[in-house]
Image (cartoon, rainbow, N blue to C red; front, side, top):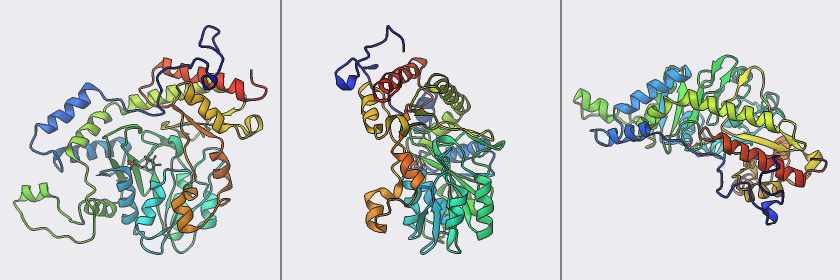
Length: 405
Ligand SMILES: *Cc1c(COP(=O)(O)O)cnc(C)c1O
């Protein structure tokens, strides 16, 4: 740490904080072009279900190298659509990871199906194929791996496991837009891949989501499902001068607006640069925190390239057993908006009440959960922001980790 920097007394104990304004763990970046794109739509004839939807979907599909992209009003709605398109229904089982945002498993419950939580691998903290294999049965209808923090899960292993059972792989890539897996873009590998456009993600439309797929039948079902189960949208009817339409299944109103799609389209033009910036920040953290005692940095496999939605570090139990919460509070006091991703889903009160107490179900996920702290990671971070994080981490670790300098 720089000798001229703020005092070494922790802000938690009344010292001077590294920052006086809180640096959030994630934040959107909007350009004047983004804002103009939304204004243009507001002045046009269609503010929803108009031409911007097709433009955004086509550009997005081509970006990830998929045949189809179907937009939704949120990533959660997109996950729900994918689960329905996969045929998940009452009594079916869906295998997923506990180390995710609860929406991943909630959509299974929307369909009266049963989420089966399988443990994660200790390196990437993504779903472990051998654990999935243990849970596979004739009732398994889908596997939902999550590309945790932006690092692709073992997609090919899940595809071959799914094939054996006639199940569908729905990849929750809410963290991984722009990531690569064995030379392919995330979004072009699984049967269906789901993205979120929440403001903390790589690309934002306010709220929004997308499913990409190469399979025509899934794309058709997804389009119908987001529009009440009606096969033809209003714009297509207007074009062909028809009033007649048929509702052929039970769907929802999960449509994304033209305002949102214009924003998404504009944001897409900067995506490659923004993912690159996230990789730079990750590299900087690695260079500057790689040798910090008591800290384990996120692991990357050589066959994949993460797009870094999160930067989750782990507090090494050997040095700071049980001190994650104190370190977390100390970092917050220093002005660093750290977070924890995630509480294992089945430990939430709703899941505990509905399925019974299951502590111990996924030992690796539960242990890792007590060690995790997500450092700020978003493409709008300045070099100074990154340095502040490094300084605060060094400062805090030196107080809590035995043997650290
Ligand atoms: C953000 C997120 C979602 C949900 O997306 P929303 O757009 O907020 O509905 C689902 N799964 C994961 C892993 C996420 O991070």
